[in-house]
Image 1 (spheres, rainbow, N blue to C red):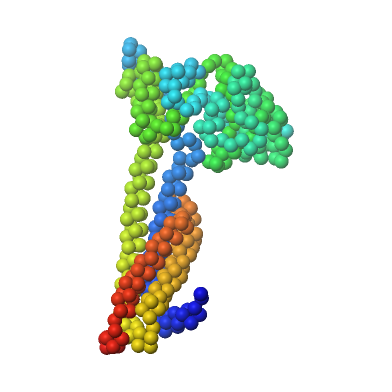
Image 2: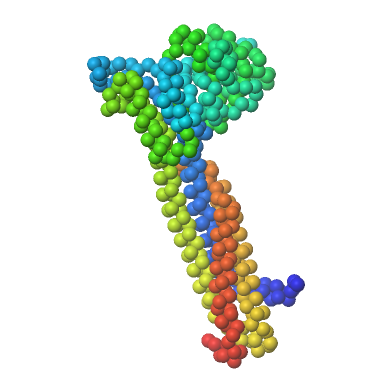
Length: 409
């Protein structure tokens, strides 16, 4: 049952001892405020790392051909390595279930025009699997499919920006777009979370590009994703084995670093994992150190408050107050101050992150924010600590005889 007199007494006690109440409240607020800001900055750094990798698959490997720098097996240095479609099949056959998706790529710059509108864009000729490597999202129509490859169809999938610039509000699906003098049918429109640059791209079947732009089976480079069940060490080993196999296939010296270049995302992912793990440990140490300091601070203040109120407790007992009621008043007062101060610290911390967040991007901290559950848990920890800190000395003081409590200095 709600006891109005009890709550009136609690608020009167808080009002009569404003300095004491503000001091204990400030300790809690500052601890939560600092805790929220530290974890918000940590999350902002994490967001920066994630954005640096974009939305592409983080288990990807890109394979580029180059020129040999060393003579090998009777072949001179300076030889240009040229990938062909059969090299993609070689990787698929040799490594089997270690490869998730793989595509060949041919890149070109084209001038696209439709009904008087014209602009320059990048053309990428790919296999259908590239959709999952690049994480494109189809908003209209469809993506390149196997039938397009088999028939060398002049079908194209365009980015959202191209759709807006050339077709305006008109539905592009089924329309024909001119790409540097060659007409292609638009079969799909895609979006990409990486932004405008990736949405200024046109995709066509790899076989169509090989036929139209050279009548050969040459490719510029290959892009694959390895089995996502691999851990970092397995992925790095796979990348090394893949490089070795391709060097043997093209008679390239093992020490030649430029003839075939393999960019394995696992290397960058491992480095980022180490950095983020180290950062997380540092933030946890500082954050929980701040929290512990807050716990110690509120505990000391509660012990002092109870000691200061020893005479008051003696008067209450002399007037017939039970030990339970004395403990309840001190305990509820402690919880009330800690809760209000903790919530205030949370609001200020989140407000500071919102206010200074945009300016922190200069320092590679993007969208700093903190989980409400995390800060709520920290606040609850301080509330419990404050309750325990108030309960133990209050229980001890409630057992003191009234005459002893009244004599306390």
